[in-house]
Length: 251
Ligand SMILES: C[S@@+](CC[C@H](N)C(=O)[O-])C[C@H]1O[C@@H](n2cnc3c(N)ncnc32)[C@H](O)[C@@H]1O
Image (cartoon, rainbow, N blue to C red):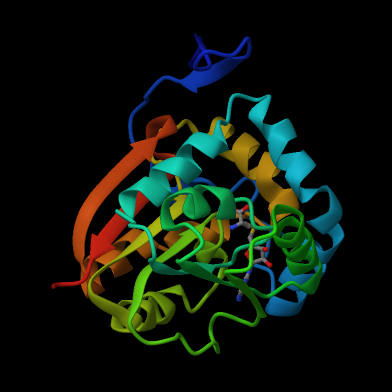
């Protein structure tokens, strides 16, 4: 139930799922049993183990045709940033998004980057030092407890907010922290309702090393964006497995 398609300009090919009739998430039981959501401590431990090889691993996943860099750039584009903007990244990990933001905001702008895992932030700090960026503040905190600065230009998160049980409250607080006209964007995985069950199970298995499980399927950050902001864009990729959603605070 899938076709082979060229992966945008590279030599790689990717398997493109062909849409099949929608199934109920409750039917997807195969991998659910015994797969529990991770606690915060378990999440931190998992990312401590991944930190040193995280950037390499994400490149390896690209070989499967998952062109994550393109979706990162789409997320940053959706924010509509300007030079000098003050930006917050939620769950920044090793800082793979910083360069896309820096290209737009420039040295007069700033990034506050927050993450739970010290080891991921150590890699992010190394990146910041290598690039001689002096406008990045790195903060180790659980997003559920972190206090946003007031009046920021934009907030974004890639592949992280769905891992946080309090995501709705966090998006609500992020929306309040935005200046009028400020924007928020999220890139994340979601349950691809049109994929056949076996392919969903395969994808969950592939991404388990990052704490992904089907138990996360009921978390819908894009709905929170629609609840607290005026939703400005929503795009799905891979037949609904990845999305980028953005919203804007009224000016
Ligand atoms: C898959 S990584 C994504 C990292 C980065 N955003 C990226 O796109 O490469 C998920 C990140 O979310 C962070 N994270 C998970 N739960 C968190 C929480 N409660 N508060 C802050 N960060 C959290 C993890 O430490 C990890 O660095």
